[in-house]
Length: 354
Image (tube, rainbow, N blue to C red):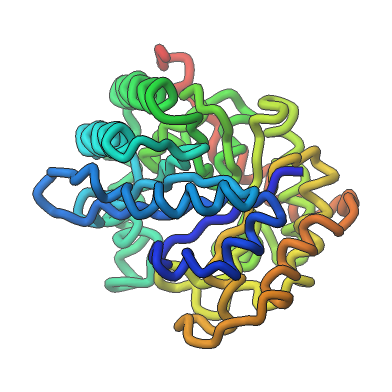
């Protein structure tokens, strides 16, 4: 089994602690470190990658692997999406140039293709008047649904991914879990609506983000909390059947992360991951990732109380030792899945020219 973990906020100096590197290296973990290109001027400094590549060399010497996880300024959308591909292209230039200057490469580029940050705030995050959220969602739907524009975005992102693969390393895509509804129906409705051109792009891996600590809270009518492992199993089985070993899965969340509204919706103990791990393995997952290292290393959300090495390693031990087990069918999820796929039945898919 291949193990991976994301780190979104920890510095290279913190992650360079020998105890952390030894723990990750002993498990052969791939560490995806967020490389933040924070400048608001549209210029991306290639030397931003230097401390991460240096960290990667130390980790690889211990048996681990390094992934670069590039992130744009929030004003540009933070994640890669249809609206910021010009900036994503420049960011890819910086990554390639930084690797050339430093003389080293990561083992993987962990691309994160998600809805623009401001769009996320207006529709999904608990910011602004709640009464206006439905109107914002309708406006977003009417503005975003465009097969022609989406097709162009797919072609452009394919070019960016192909260049990073050729010049740096294989490229994975973090993939919102319920987007598998598009995959099931061979359509692109959710991806288009959310500005996420993912499945039509030839990534080297599709890393399905099934964060069952808070996903059922976000969509309780579709996925009641006690049905979450079954939902994970069914959609991961679908991804595995389509992509084989290119279908990865990320479980969590062990930390609230940078998105507001997730307070109290994280796994604080490794045993809480066990049902999701069992379901993922039963679905055929051979690469299991965790989001994120912050929660593995620290007990509190402010990252002030460090766990002991054995306590932190227990999260990885749970992933390795938990046996595969198919969750029983769940009537509520069966109904929720039917509703989800009915609502996202893509009537425009015949117009896409990808």
